[in-house]
Length: 462
Ligand SMILES: Cc1ncc(COP(=O)(O)O)c(C=O)c1O
Image 1: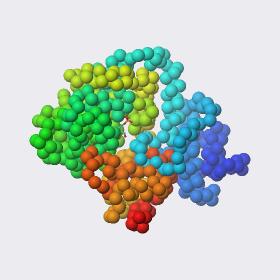
Image 2 (image 1 turned 120 degrees about the horizontal axis):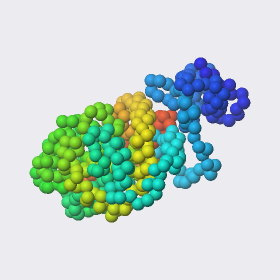
Image 3 (image 1 turned 90 degrees about the horizontal axis):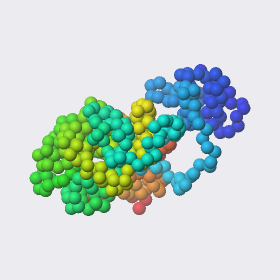
């Protein structure tokens, strides 16, 4: 068992352990693949808490010295392959950082991201095809970038052709492009009764009439959709069929086929927002759009799987709708930046995307286990790899009240009312994002705070 000698270090314990790890890797005491002691083993040996060892391992992971994997423990990484360019010494920007623990934004866990992507950025700058990223791109995006997009989409749409891919500046831009290109002001647009707030603000901004379709544990209920369609003619349905935001629902294959059949019967377009498709528990379930490919636009982005700052997303369209979408991209942003499209393409074609997805899914599973443990007695809707959970508060809490008091206690969460497609009074649900805290310890701390708030009586705070 590796036991660090710490006598030469005088900083906080967790940093000393991380430094000792770096030293022992560079002088060959530890080699690639060596397994480190468990938190408990090392904590007992060094007479510190397991939390201190966890922080030390997190720090070592941040420096790309080690990697932790469920079932495999923490092990030493190959340092040659990972040699990183020296980071520049400019002081880090720390603008507007608050003391709040933010569980309100769905984003990938970012501890090791910067290391992988710094490599990818340097690789991009050195590559021979870098020049194409510096120019204007043709409509829809540079063919090589669209082909990389098609490669990404083939995880869900095995026959994806690059000619049907349109590059967007993220999924929100994709939603905007598709909704404005394929519907008109005053049209009826349907979505889930509880939906991603970006859909609500977009529909209102574009003056579409937005109506929420009632849901159950699988998302939109086909009978309720049929009833709505019999009363009024919708132009479009926006649907998040996998790890729905906010309820985390995953629609079964049968339900997808029913929704697609209704789109055929009542002649509306499906906008299939599959941004969380890579978190599916059963990857054999086909995307919703695959059940009605001639009247569906598939939409995704790399924001949740790779990194939000890329601002690269993909629309996959039937040929007949393609030119309306590419024109709308041109009118809205001319083109998403070919520089980030090039970076995204490199990440995909070099297979780094698969590695990053594996890291994110592992991390999400670990964080889900923490949430299940802390909220064992509370009603939670979630999925094994979901980045978020949908929590029902016990009586007499209301969601707005809870979000306000959580904030006063230093934790930001979103109240259920923010997800209502049509405002219909208060709810007792809140959405908690598990991936936004920087470490599992930080998540545990935030969730424990929320759990003790849930256990208290809100009327005490009136
Ligand atoms: C369902 C859904 N669609 C679209 C988006 C927007 O993603 P992007 O950051 O790629 O614009 C989000 C972001 O949270 C989302 O949850």
